[in-house]
Length: 257
Image 1 (tube, rainbow, N blue to C red):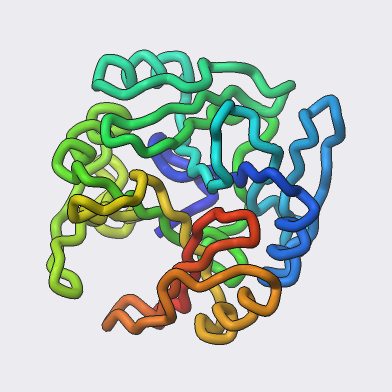
Image 2 (tube, rainbow, N blue to C red):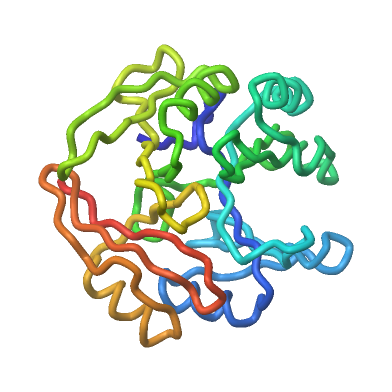
């Protein structure tokens, strides 16, 4: 389960890169009741999504050449520079070298050996998201990759994650735990993409919602689309995969109680 008491390796931030800030802020505001707090040109027009006044996620313009609209999941580190070195040593790539973000923290962006982008956040004044696991907030992070075994080894080296394989809907699903955290520290999973998938490896954020079906329907009325219509997963909940008006994929889930 996600927590706002961030341990090393835990998801601690998520943000959206987009070509149209106006379109996506209107979309997510209508979908999740998020408000937007901008930080102006000095921060590259980066903004934060708020729920009840608390930081939930970030949003900003695309900054990398050739980049497509997408969500990025950040994982907690106490030393972004050391994490960057470990990523390279483990076979990944550093896309954005470690850099200070004012007094908020230090970040770096990477690509894993399977091609999935991700990032690390070393908090200072900005610890990360301030709510999780409640409607309108991040509750799970899922890696879709053609190389699940290699990904397990890579992230185990970088963040010390532990993994447990479980049968799920006819596939093998890998549940990820924090180092020495046990099942209660599970925060995400790995899904193997059956080649040729035609889909780039990626991390897919899941946001908790009160009613998966209603949220999926509302996403269409707001200009988004449904990639996977709501389905029930016994013991897990009801989830759907959606795409915002600018093409960024994400998932919503009404978790089983």
